[in-house]
Image 1 (cartoon, rainbow, N blue to C red):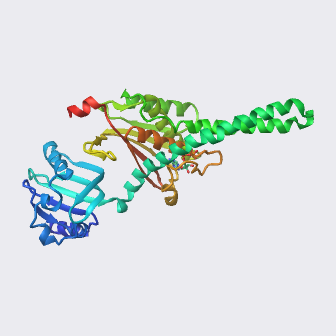
Image 2: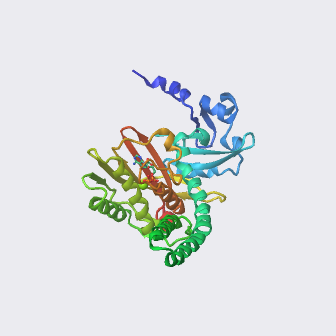
Amino acid sequence: MIGSSDTEAILNGLSVAVLVVDPDEAIIFANPAAEQFFQSSISSLTKSALPDLVLPDNPLLSLISKARVQDSVIREFGFRLSTPRLGTRSVTVDCAPLGGNPGYLVLSFQEHASAGRLGGTLQHRDSARSLRGMAAMLAHEVKNPLSGVRGAAQLLEQSVPVEDRQLTRLIIEESDRICNLVDQMDAFTENPRFERGDVNIHEVLDRAVDIAKRGFGRGITFLQEYDPSLPPVFGNRDHLIQVFLNLVKNACEACAGKEGEIFISTSFRHGIRLAVQASKSRLDLPIMVTIQDNGPGIPEDLQMHIFDPFVSTKIEGTGLGLALVAKLTDDHGGIIDLESDHDGTTFRILLPMLKELQDAS
Ligand SMILES: Nc1ncnc2c1ncn2[C@@H]1O[C@H](COP(=O)(O)OP(=O)(O)O)[C@@H](O)[C@H]1O
Ligand SMILES: [Mg+2]
């Protein structure tokens, strides 16, 4: 049996750097991982105050005062932590009040390179960005010449002998097919400054489930558990329907052929924030939607590339579904998290809520 005296041993075993600060920001505890992380011994860490360790105007200090005021856990992904000693590092920071000790906080730091799941979480942003450029290139370099090829084949069709017409037909049909594919990719070139407003995410999810039940999701059991007090998402309804429809479709396809079950839930999460690149602002992402299936899971080596375009294991697959999900989620400033093993797959999407409500909270 593990007793309370083992707590310190447990903390010492963690690979995540943990510090505890008192209400005056003095560091009163540091674990060995913190020693490594800050490249400073535990005894010197516990003799210093946090502002000595990080630069005095460090946003970490405002983050922890926010955690104190809210008296709740704040997690920030993609936080750029600058210290005079270590330079700047990109980390995930958790600030959690120490229960029963007002003003005391437990801080934990995890560097992105080792933040397993987070690696996957932010990877979708890069996928989305590289895809945008490629889609624009395809529209110009493929579609335009292709319409020339198609037009030439149409002209030829009139002058070639009847028995050769099937060749010109073939050129026309194949050109149309490629054009269609490029059109599908057009969705990726859209300006991210699309129209946004308050969207009832439950209505969006119901819509996706409804479409699924009538077609590709026949015979699959859908379980929905919604948080009725959830505020509206700050987003674009059509784009969000596309996001969840794609995720539900993949989930249905994954559990086809067995007793498929898809569990969709929503919840409100305090304190999950994402640092907005190249700016000091932070985006709160309190609305969490989870889509879980009991399919065979996604092989680990595939998980790394799952949001890249044209990655598909299906005979008829385009591999564009998750790439589009990544792009549209990124446009919303949201993030996707993925967890999968052979019992099933869970996608979690974090989205921002309506701005006015954000400012009020
Ligand atoms: N819920 C899931 N369960 C298992 N595998 C999945 C799931 N979602 C996505 N995948 C895998 O990711 C690949 C890419 O998905 P996607 O981008 O939607 O393309 P497509 O559905 O056209 O194959 C799929 O081919 C499948 O191998
Ligand atoms: Mg798909």
